[in-house]
Structures are given as structure tokens and as C-alpha cells.
Image 1 (cartoon, rainbow, N blue to C red):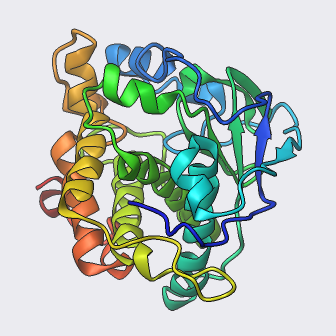
Image 2: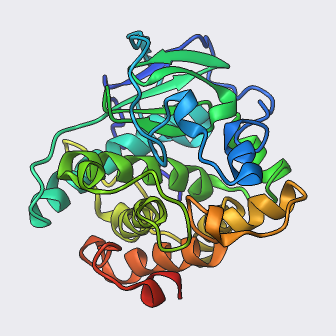
Length: 300
């Protein structure tokens, strides 16, 4: 999606750690090279060792550093030209959307934090590196992202790329924040694996929440009433679906040279992730209760 040049994307809750420019670093060996792929190969979820929560859980550990505000990120034009500003603009649009949508779902809303980091950072869930991939930490209610992951989406996972694919990643992690404040994380059994496990239900629900935001994103406004984003195009939706497919468990297992083993899945297949994103896009966040459906409807 394209930001409206004149929209106000300033947001003091988005911080940068260890980077002085908005230029994305080269690929950091994200996700596949890290604990996630080892989990897939062994059939054991090891992501908790990195303290991630977007499939893992808060494990305690290091204290998160405050970082610095993105002073150069002021307008939608900045978001269109600078990857870090695009992260900030996306979070700001998501803030506007969920401020209204969360109460409609019976959730008492509070804002998350967001941190753009380079290589490694300390979090309330423990120390994290680029190999962890984008994640949400419930311990400090913060979205963590090394933007070099966007390069990996294209080069390692074969996603189409494009701005909406990048925005989808952030919207998915923001969906985990909604699960945290709604109590879903506390109620779910995130220790299990398999296509109808609670771990997978959490991940495809976050995809569904992302799709709901994408459908409504061009109606989100800054404080002056200016729309953050222009209407989404069919090609942009295809780019987001490509990103969702690229990080499906079956696709990652195939890329790692392992056979597809659904019983080890923690995030859902490529088809599931695309389908639940589409459900949110077509029907809104109210249709995203993946814990209310049976295994057949969940898996498809």
C-alpha cells in the first residue's frame, strides 16, 4: 500500500536500536537459519530459547533498552521513501484501526511498543538476534523487527516483495499484541504442535487480524483527519498473500530440505495462512476466532 504523502506518521512508541540510518541492512540469515528451522527439523519447538512470543512465549531475561525515536519519520512521504519510516507509519495506522476495533470485540485496548533493531537486542523475553525473525514479546508488549527480514522474504523464501508484504509482517505481529491484551495467550496451550494445535490457531488468527486491517487500512486517519494510506490494489493483496504463503510451515520445511511433517507445525501451512488472511480481509476481525472452529474448518 502507498501512504498519503501529507499524512502525519509521528509516533514516539516506535524506537530504533543500534541503527543510524533507515537503510535496511543485508540479509541476516533470518528465521530459517535460526531456531525456527531447527524446530521444524527436530519436531520440537525450540523458539522459546530465543524468548520469542509470536509462536513462543515470554521467558523472562534481559531488560529491553529504550532506543531513540525516529525523528526523520514525519509524513507519509517519508514512509514511502524509507523502510524504517514505513514501519512507523504502519504501526501508527494499526494504532488507529485497533483503537476502534478492539473495543468492538470486547477487548480493553492499550498500545504496544515497537522496536527496529540491527543484528541483536535485549528484550523482556531475553536476548534476540536477527535470526529470530520478527516477533512480539508479551513481557514488554513490544513488536521487534530487523528490517533485513524483508530482504529474506524475497531472496530466501521467494515472496513477491512489495510494500504491503512488509506491512503485513508488522500487522501480523500487532495481531499478537491483540491476543496478549485479550487474554488469548494466557488461555491457549502454546506448547503443542500440529495443524490444529493452539500454536497454529494463534498464528493464523494473527494472519486473519492482519487481513482485517489491510481491508480497512485506507480508512485509518491521523489526528488531523488525513488518511494514512491509499486504497489497496489487487496486486498489493497478492503480494501480502505471497508473503503469508512464503512463511508457511510446509514451505519452510521444504526449503530446509526436510519432508513436510504436519505434526510438527507451529504456524500453519501456506494455504492456511493465506486463507485466514483472506477471511479477515473479506469479513473483518470479528471473523477471526480460530479457537471457535473445528479442526476441519481450521485446516481446510
